[in-house]
Amino acid sequence: MTNEELQSYVADELRWDPKVDSAAIAVAADDGAVTLRGTVGSFREKREAKVDAEHVYGVKNVKNNLEVRILTEHRRDDADIRGAVLQALTLDTMVPADIEATVMDGWVTLTGTVTWKFQYDEAESVASNIGGVVAVDNQIEIVPPGPSAEDLRHSIKKAMDRNAKLDAKEVKVESSSGTVKLSGTVSSWADHDAAVDAAWSAPGVRDVTDHILVAY
Image (cartoon, rainbow, N blue to C red; front, side):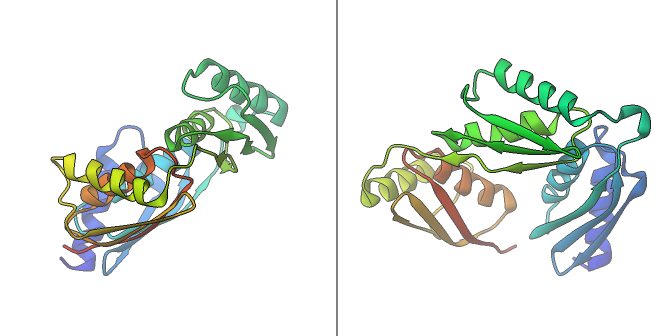
């Protein structure tokens, strides 16, 4: 696939998504590396645009340089945004009650501790969907119980083997002190995401270092 073709496919995918206003988004592609530039009206749109680009076959990585520019009538002061973020976090049963949020110039910083990566992701997603937010700095720490490195490696490999959508024979798993390192190759971005998700789903994982190569 040429750079021009990949660029066109990503642009088409952005136009296809009704959650993203792609009118002011420029797409560049270079050997599978895609860069998004331009402006969007919310931080949620910025996140959605990156996800859309990653879904396109042939995309190896996405650099999201989109800027969030909130129209005057949609601007909110920091105290209002913080209140809305904290309220949304409180109402979400997947997010622990002690997660804190601070806001400066629309930039939200999340702090606290969680046991699982899905809680970390959920808190970030909740904050990202609040009107007036221009960026989210997720400083939440994942502090799970810690099984042995071998137990952790074994449980992740078993989870990968059970996944009908994932061909994990070329994925190598290493573990040390709750940090998991993934390496090897997979044939699609979907396989890549499934492998990373399997690693994060294992009890005791604090961090995942992703060195998996997507080789089409």
